[in-house]
Image 1: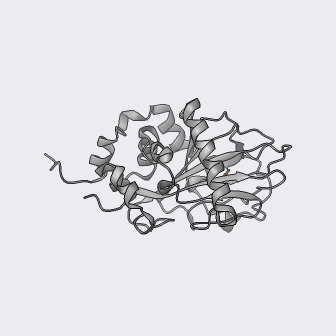
Image 2: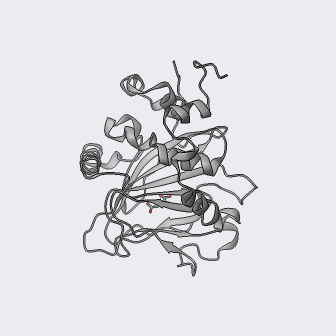
Length: 260
Ligand SMILES: O=C(O)CCC(=O)C(=O)O
């Protein structure tokens, strides 16, 4: 029997209802075979509205510093450290289906690496095909990402492209002559606002150019790593007391901050 005071990945996932059954078999199979899966309708209308409003007010408040804690990218609006910026984001990094999917991919103890946001501005946003892990597949998966669509993703407004099956292969930098070029096997994440796509971050992927006439394509990136690796943003260093106070012990474990 497990000591109830002890927190580990099994206890944290159980407390957060992110058990094996939280993720239907079809999504597990897609994660295994293609390297990504799409979960429709994760965010309802009121939550989406609140997330969009928070996105806009943070961009306005932070101005040219927005995103600086992790990464700034020309032609995009980026935000970082969203764990500490509003309780409206609490349901993102604690979502049971997403956590179950991340556990399915990583297959061992993991933690939140970062919670960021990105919007490709009109005419901008095209990225190289890349992975979130720096080397070839070595028999284990180390990182898993999820993209939360705050706006409809269309062919025109800079949807994400992913190349199915590449999560078990070479790093694109080792094999692709031109990682910016379209790939013959790439698939485009065209889906309505409210959708979440979970992707094994060893898959080749990237944002595409927002070719729309002024349309927004705001998204959150909720990114996880196997527990033995450093976080993209050191959650312990950035954690505000007011954030820590409202979290359960299981959530603190997922952030890899002091549980008690
Ligand atoms: O926002 C997207 O479509 C993908 C972004 C991405 O892969 C990145 O910024 O590394």
